[in-house]
Amino acid sequence: MSTRSVRPSEEDADSPELTAVQAALAAEHSAVYGYGLLGGRVDGKRGAEARAAYDGHRARRDALARAVRDLGGRPVVSDAAYALPFAVADSPSAVRLAAVLEDRIAGAYADLVRAAEGPRRKEAAGALREAAVRAARWRGGNVAFPGLAERAAGADPAATGPVEAAGADSAR
Image 1 (cartoon, rainbow, N blue to C red):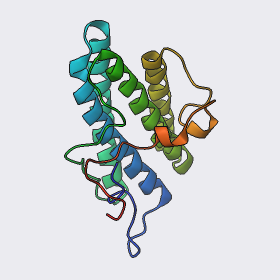
Image 2: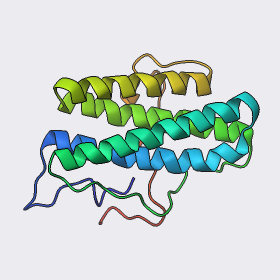
Image 3: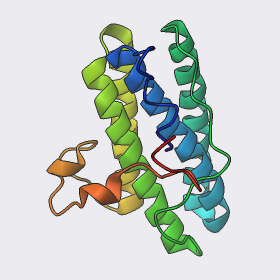
Image 4: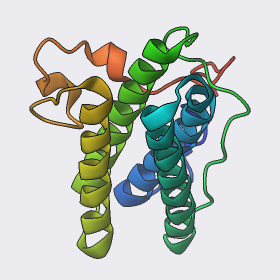
């Protein structure tokens, strides 16, 4: 994700909850993009799973945009394109990308669980659970602490960071 619209400006510091909701929204934008790309590279049962995940991420994205507005913020917008962590040229690489996307979504929702309270926290925990289940299905196995890359045995924390917007720089 491009960090330009997730980080608050000096004069307009957002609440930790709004910042976490914005980060989850940005992650959902990335997931929608990623599933749109990988969906054409998987077929059969995996294709149906990709379409269901795509629809689920679109629904969560829309709900998060409403949550941002409810918290008094302006929802981050999707970037035009995102740089992928690796080339996705075939079904195995598409499946691998799906697992990475879900791991990253789980991380964003883990942060939202920490920042939110009440119904929003419960919804974030449900989204974290769904992402962890999808990641396990795509990967063929699970991790000990979904959403907490630093806890996963042998995980490279840099490998589970957000997908960067194509052409994005950290100065934005």
